[in-house]
Image 1 (cartoon, rainbow, N blue to C red):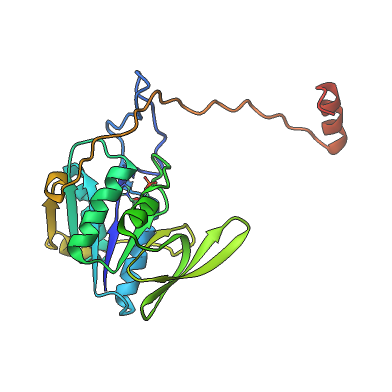
Image 2: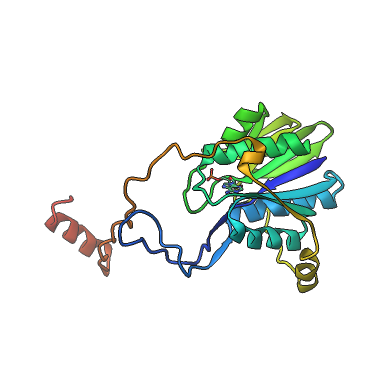
Length: 248
Ligand code: AMP
């Protein structure tokens, strides 16, 4: 079974982002970029499936300009077998990405697709669900455990108020939640080896997908600054303050 992992290049989670002065977007100049954390978990899960014998090949795919090859190479260093860049400089929104991934899934005859549950930049949480709908595949979103049993993927999902375990008939789409696994680090020899692993390019036009954005961003704002808190020494002081401020 071939496993396809969708990998997105995003601002590193430790970076304090700035907004462009015209409030059109986040300023990405000179900002450290990384693999979206949920995609790292997706890569790790795919590699574990290969190590356990459930998967035969792990293919990573990223849609974007040439800079996303950096994240694809990292994924190869982590253990993926080969990479595909869907090469475009266009702004990509979840529906366009889902359509591109759908075409790659068809072309490569993929048995399981693993995506992150969301990108930490746009926080969309849409691509996996849209891909499943377009491909007519069952979906297991927010996965905290994945097991392959014969023709099925047994997925435990993190849902409101607990866990839900479902059986998905393969081929299927899974999106990863934080507790699915702890991703490994790439070793230096594997980083060197990754340079020689295959990375192919294909364009949206070659895949027959129109990626024109459907949504327009009106304005991007920073979250409101939280007012400074006050320390109280005990409960009675707290109650007194709340009474004075009319809360009680
Ligand atoms: P989102 O729907 O934007 O929150 O993204 C969910 C997941 O879709 C990500 O964790 C990735 O696995 C995948 N994805 C989003 N954007 C891209 C992209 N440009 N290239 C490849 N995969 C992507």
